[in-house]
Structure formats: structure tokens, C-alpha cells
Amino acid sequence: MPNHRLLAASMAAILCMTGGAWAAASCGNSAKGFDGFIKQVKAEAAAQGISARGIAALDDVSYDPSIIKRDRAQSIFSQSFLDFQAKMVSDSRITRGKAMMQQYKPIFDRVQKQYGVPAPVILAFWALETDYGGNIGDLPTIQSLATLAWDCRRPDKFRPQLLSALDLVGKGDLSAAEMRGAWAGEIGQTQFLPKEYDETAVDYDGDGRRDLRKSIPDVIASSAALLIKHGWQPNQPWLQEVSVPADMPWKEADIAIQHPRSQWAKWGVKGSFKSDSFPASLLLPMGRKGPAFLAYDNFTTAYLKWNESLVYSTTAAYLATRIAGAPKLSPGNGTVTPLTYQQIIELQKILVSKGYDVGDIDGKAGASTRAAVKDMQIKMGLPADSYPDADFLRAIGG
Image (cartoon, rainbow, N blue to C red; front, top):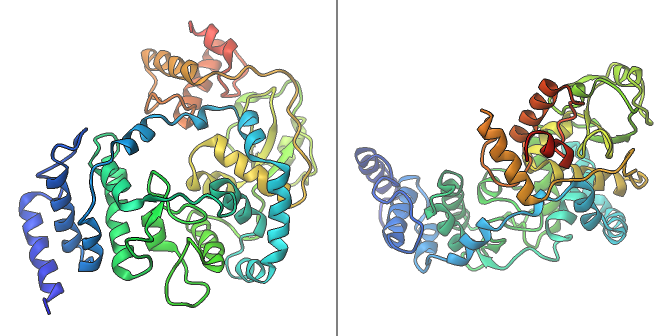
């Protein structure tokens, strides 16, 4: 039997001298060089102490150009919040969520007592990610991750995920054949990336393995554990719908800014919240004319770490309130004309030309884009609600 500790130490020394496993084959945009890259991944995995069983999962992996096409075609989160939630927050999902809350009540009660995460919060993620396990994906995870790790667009994101996937196979949580899921490497009923799976998943049914594909107890508890890792605070709210007046200091409406709920009440924000010193942010996912929410720390930390898309996270948080019994939201105080995917790209290019850093020009109005919009609104004397609608795009020359 080989001495795996000695082998790992030897490989680590070799990698140190060569500048790391990725030095010889950094990245590529085709199958050319992919086989050499896989050899480098195997060396890195051995250096990290991943078992031979895990490393062997790379033996039949090939470059998959269809994964790259999927990666380049993402535009779903460019939809407006109202459009996205209309598709995702259906009556059937709410009804089923409530039924599952009763069906698995002993597990949810145990999880809430241990982790402090309410059942509706977990159920909403479960619904949005895979329709309660009905669509977990069937693509070979390791092949998908290897392709994305070799690709030059986001190698630093996917290379650690690939190594973690190998580690999961090596530890016996999933076999290489079971390691199947979504195109970007997410696994299981609440779509964990392998690193999250490897570091956070919980064996809650006590069978000796963490199975997020088939074990409901493991799925529920692991989802709660990940939210805790992301900063979830037990027994605290996450999102609450409110209404806003026609005029107020709009620049304060920012998820990066908190005020006591009493201050929001003084500014004319109304809802079923206590006018007290509890801190909250005013979230306007479609600007001052659209829906409005008080967002709490659990939203600005745990939700946005689960998925950094504001549209997705707001939808997930809103769905959780609906499963918990909240009424259907109000569309807001007026007509909002959201930007299309191509218009957001145009907006981002204009902002970059004016000296703003918006991150990737990707057609998604993320945090950097919203911050730039707000700064321009302030400079132009416009209501600074951080939301770029068609009027704003025209105002800046789009």
C-alpha cells in the first residue's frame, strides 16, 4: 500500500518549486491543452491529500463546449424583480411549501431549534433552486467543473470547486457516478457548490454520508447550516413589505444603509412593523415607484451570500414570507419601465466611460452598477433610488 502522506508531501514540494499546479497549463478556450490541465489538477489534488478514489474521478473527463455556451448565455437575472417573481412565486409553490412544512415538521422543528432558521426560509430556497427536488440536474459535475476551471473567464472561481468535488468523491459522500447536477457544478436539492457541500453539509439522518441529492433531513439541515455560515441570525426577521411616500430622502434607500425603524416611520414608510430602534434598510428593487421592503441583516448578509443577485435574493426572501403567511405584494406606486438585458449593457458601458467601476459588463444591475447609478442621480439632482430605468438611461445619453 502506498504511503499517501509521503506522496502528498512530495507532490507539495514539487508544486512549490513549479509555482503551483496551474502554472504549466493556466487556462484555454478550447479542448487544446485540456488533457495537460487535467494532469495538473491530479497533481494538485494529490498534494492536498485527496484520495486516489477522488482523483480517479478525473480519468474519463473531457472538455465540454456546451458548458461554455451555457456560461456565456446567462441573462435570467437581468429580468426585473416583478417579472422574475411573477414566474417563480407561484400559488402552487406556496401551497406545496406549506404542505411540506407540515409533512416534515419534526425535521424542521429540530433544525430551527438547533440552527435558528425558520422552515419557510429553507423551503423558499428549495423551491427556487430545484422546485423542491424535482429538477436537480443530471449533468456530470466533475466534467462541468473541469471545463469551467480550464476556461479563462472564471478559473479562480471553479478550480477550488473542482478540487472539492474530487474530495467529496474521495470521502465517500457521493460516488463519481452520483456526482451529477446543474451545468455550473451545483449539486443536490438546494444546489450546493462542491466547496460549500464539502465544508458545510450535514449528515442529519445519521447514515454516515452527506447526501444532498436524496436525503431530505440532510438537505434541510445542510441548508440551514449554510445560512448560518453566511451570517444568519436566529430569531431575527429577514424581509417585510412596506409602502413608501411620494417623496422622501431617497438616497437613504440603500441596502448598505440602515436606520432605526422609527426613522423610516418618520419619513413616511408604512407597514406592520414596530416603530422602534431595530435597524433596517429600505429595499426598492425597482426604484421608488415599485415594490418596497424593509430588509434586515439576515437579508443583507445571508441571502445575498447565498446568491448575490438582488433580483434572486429578493424573490427568495419574498417567497419565504408568502409561505409564512404574508399576503401578495403590491406592485408599487406607479409604472416602472425596466431596462432590457441589452440596455443594461449599454448603461454599464456609459457608466464605465464616465469613470465608474461597474465590475463585469454583463447585463446585470449588480451592486457596483447600482452604486454608480445612485452617484450619478445625486450629481444630476434626480431622486437617488439607485434604480436605472429607461428615463435614467436617456438622461445620461443612452
